[in-house]
Length: 110
Image (cartoon, rainbow, N blue to C red; front, top):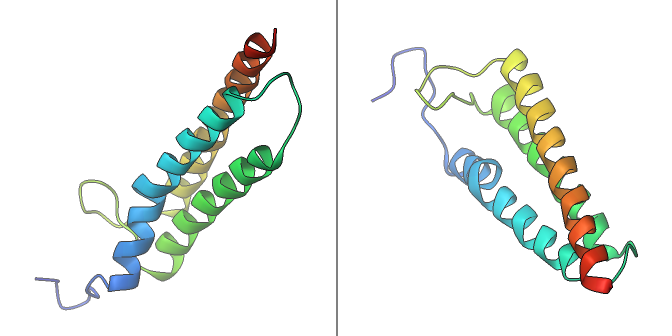
């Protein structure tokens, strides 16, 4: 049960957290697989979707922290500094996997 000053987690909050924690990253993995299966280095709508999903995951985490009392994995309130660190790590890993996917696509095209 929440403390007196703490708001309960809403259904929207749960859905948003599920998206940025799990579903968004699953979509990124699927899109990376689709990109890797392309022939050559052509950029397609999969690339656009990949980066749109990446941006939406960062935005979802921002919204969660700033408007829905987002929490850390151990239940403490999340901070804007944690969002910045999360965003930097997510964008770095997303760029790495995007590059690897295109590398695999180039190998697949030869």
